[in-house]
Length: 555
Image (cartoon, rainbow, N blue to C red; front, side):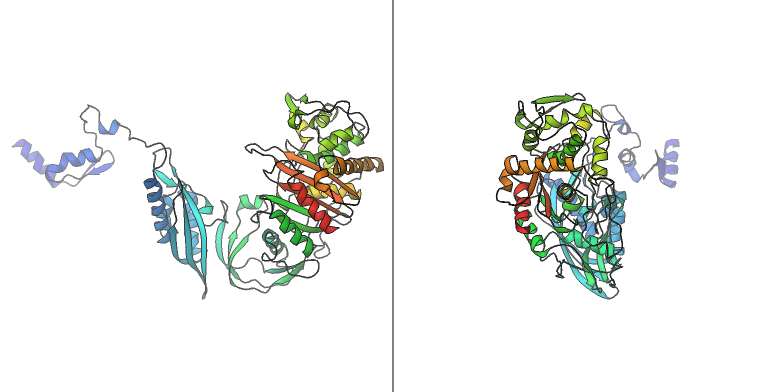
């Protein structure tokens, strides 16, 4: 009776809180519920259920896991359930505000997300929606993709979160906003007054974005309404401009005139279209005016904003330093061994060649690495940095070309890294704009900061170099580049380019790449140009023909 009474009394009470969880006891199912919620019942093997760790699934994702995870994420996003969609990713904290802002800030509605055919752990999908803002609507359509990964802690498949999942033009930290444009549109003109458009020039998009950001408010235009990418801190640190994705209502553009030559810009576009991941810049030597700039990959302006090791094209700057210090001259005997060890690094030449009893001119023309690194023990750590800044105007972070640009970097380094800097590796970083300027400085004798928009438009000050090379140094440097264009590694590309010419090739090794980046810089008369083909191989056969074609066309 006592037992019965106690059971009856239990049935009258509410649910029992066991181990922080509620165990609901219903009739004879009390034990089952207790065990289900982890109250600590003994298992058949004598262990308690609460003591056993759940099995964590590992290994590759199955097709079903990828498809199911992608479907859950896309369904929640399409339904406007931002929290649920974010929880299906591996970074809900980052995903939630962007997915929420997709509706609230970007004013995107009627979203339809259609998954495509899975490829491994990646699922492409299409987006069709409507952007609606204050009575104005426009359709929005684009393609994107997501990747599913397995969370290490519990093996759960989740969407690998990046902002680009929401829109491919987004970088992590960016946002989508629809509203009055931050700046009025601009109508960009070439030097002859013709309009610059992406329809005419495929790679001009980043330049147009930069011109609008810089001159939109000054050019007298009126802002419209648009859906745009607003860049976050990380993207702004890389000088990426906000980007318009959809224009709902047109503003009234102001006009900005550039220095681009329409015929040369068209030629540059044609040249980079022949080589994947190529970029090129053409300058007027006497003024610094940018006559053409093009990129095979139109999403990023590598020509102006790239930050890449320039390889042996940097030997132009290094040679000017060695000549000034009396460590080299064109016809003077100069060592070019197979190997040279400096700072505990063993450097070598391409294909381990050597030049016995050769001159510095021969070493420059054949791009002998050891000929330059062998001089490292005689140099101070900051010598190359000072030469680049004081003579060539590089690495000062003060160029004002009219749109975002990277001015090159030649940091002070020591030991092996300093030796590597002498041949354009180590911490040295450049882009085609920088290296075209190097050739222009050699041809002119004076650094003229390149520019795309005349400083007279807005009264900005152009960067200056603090000194020039002596006449003797300049003459020898021109002799080296002229000889290389005629008889050295640049000869094949420069064949048929007549007149007063000079050139230098370069190949820059990059970790993780099977082929080096190919570089080429050259001048002809009042023109100077430089180009790079990433993962292209030797500069003479990759970037060389692109640069030479523009020099011919410009002449």
